[in-house]
Image (cartoon, rainbow, N blue to C red; front, top):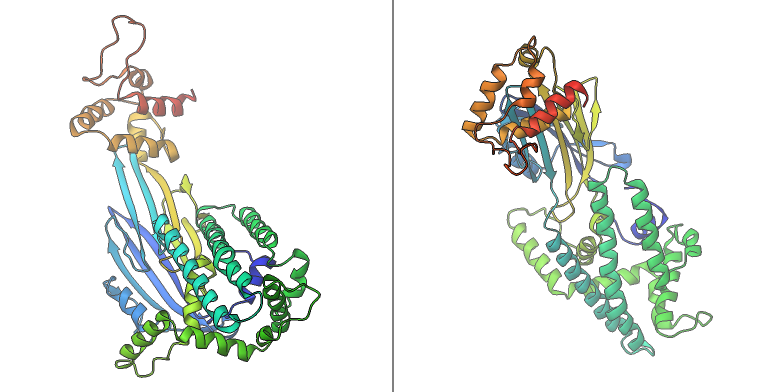
Amino acid sequence: MKLNPLCMLVVATVALLGCEHDCYEVEIRPDGDGFERKITGWRQGGQNDAEIMSLKPEALARIAAIYPKRETSPDSTEQTFSGRFLGETPGDLGGAGRLVRYQSPLGDCWSYIERFRGNDDLESQLAEKRKAADRLADLLVGWATAELGGEPGFADLKKFLDLNLRQDLKNLGLYFWTVNAAETITLEKEDLNEQLWSRIGLYLCERGYFEIRDLPRLLRFDYDGLASHFQRLIARRMGVPDGSPIPDKLRFIADKTKLEASFNAFLASTDEYKRQLAKWEKEAELKPDAEKPKPSVVFEELLGKVLSDMTFVTPDSLGVKLYAARKPYSTNGDWDEKISAVAWSSKIESNESPASHFYATWSEPNEDFQKRHFGGVVLEGKSLGEYVFWYCSLAPAEAAEWDRFIAGLLPDADWRSAVKGFRFSFDPQPDAAEPSKPAASLADRPRSLLVKDEEGE
C-alpha cells in the first residue's frame, strides 16, 4: 500500500510492536492431473530489515506436517519443503485454493485460484470491526471518565466520545477495510487508494480532528507536537475556546511517561487484560521465558481490528510462481516469458483481513490431434479454453457422439462445412411454423469457436 501523509499520520500516532515478519516463496508446477508444490520460508527483521532468521518452530511444524519432503537440512536458515497434490491446494499458509486440469481431445485447460489467509466472510469481518470500534469507544470513555470526570465541560466531551467518536471509528474502520480490500482485488490500485485516502482525510477534517494545513506540523512525528494537538482537540470538545489556556487536568498528556502510566493503569483493570494475563500465566507453566503482556496490548488489538491492514505487526511477505506451458489468457499475475511462469507478490495479513487472491487460466492445445483432423492448430488460448469447458460439460453419451464426429474429420476434406452442418442426434427439430429458422443445437458453441477461429467470421 502506498502511504500518503494521512496514512503516515495514523501510523505515527500509535506504537508499533515490531518489524519482524515471515517470508515465503511458493513454486507450483502442474504435473499430470496434479501439481508439485515447493515452499521456502524464513524470518526477516532487524535494522533495515536485513537480519535473516529461521521461521518460528510452530510455523515450521505446521508446514512440515503438510509436506512429505524436507529439502533442506534442519539447521538451515531458509527451510524448503515439497510435495505433490491433487486438485486442492494445501493450507500451508492459511487459505484455500484449487488447481484443476480440464481435458479434451483438442487440448487441455488449466485453472488455478488460491486465497492466502484472509477471511471471505465479509459480513462477519465488518461485524467484528463494529464490535471492536464499540469496545474501543467504551474504553476511551472509561479512561476519560477516570481522568476528567469532575472537570467542567466533561459532559460534552463524554457525549462526543460516546456518540461522535464511536461512529467515526466505525466509519474509519470501513474506509480502511475498503482500502485493504481494494489492494487484494484491483491491479490498478494506486489511483483508487489515493481517492480513498483523500476521502478519509476530508472525513476527519469535516469532523474537526485536524485541518489539512496542520499536516506538515503533525508529520514531524514529534511527540510534543502531537500531544499539543490532541490537548487542544480535547479542550475544544470540553468547550474551551482555542485562545484560552489548556486546563490543568489535560497537562498530563504532554508528558509521555505520565500518559502511558495513566492509560496502562486503566487498561490493566479491564476484563480483556485480565484474560490476557490469565492466558500468559497458563502458558508460562510450559514457557517460563514467555514475556508478560503489557496492558497496552488491549488497545492495540482493538485498534488493529478496527483499522484492518493498519495492524501493528509487520505483515508477512509472499511470492508465488506458477509454471505454465502457455501464457495465461486470464490472470492477475505477471507473466515471465523467460521462465514460462506467472508471478505474484503480496503482503499477507492475519485471517481477519481481506484475503489475497491469485488466479490464472491457460490452455494447452493438442497440436498433433488438431493437425491430424484440421490440418493445423485451429483452437488455442481463450478459444480453446472455452471449447474445453464446453466439452467437459457433456454427458458421456454426448461426448461419445461428438468424439465420433471429430474423429471422422480430415484436413483434406471440407471439414468446415461438416462442422457447420453437424447436429446431435437428440437436437430438437426445426419449428414447423418456421422451417427456415435453424433450431438450437448443443453443437452451436463449439461450431462458433471452430469455424470463427479458422475463417475469421
